[in-house]
Length: 264
Image (cartoon, rainbow, N blue to C red):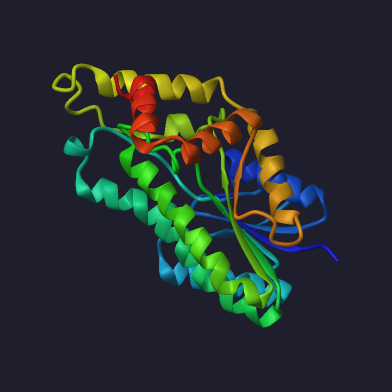
């Protein structure tokens, strides 16, 4: 019997490719996002993961129709860029509300279902910016670092119930994420043009980055894996090597390297 899967943010970017791959493997896929979707491959639910009532309604809809939830892929997210000094706190809160609290809300809603089932898998979308925070993308980096810690702690909480929780840390991927980034250019002159240079470098890396179909296939493969082999995954060898360096290098040296890449 095919697995019942929820993919948040499943109507665009790597979320769409993840959903498509899972559907091709015989899964029944429910996509959840604020925007409508008429893709016949999926069962779509219009919902905002930052709204508790929407989350509850989405999970109930899946249960009413399918009777269970085997996999949750928490993919919904967006990015902001700019200096901390010039980023208003409302925008910063919105970054955390979507990227972290939306993920937490969906997880909170499905865990009782999976616990009663005695099985389930949750895959959270993190980033290589989690172990190596990127200047002028501070709040984005913070949201992804929080996801990693949430993943590690929750995985140990629910392990005895047959539920596995992991996070995937993509690097640069060529999607609409770049164009959708909320840019805050204020203060660029004060910072000597470093904000615009950093964002331009990041966006160049993204637009020449990994094929989103390959990234989606990888994420879907992680979602379909049985057992609890790894709590954190990085996509592609170079990013696996990068996350390894982030673990073994002294923080001072790692942060200096990040400064040379994205801070100067």
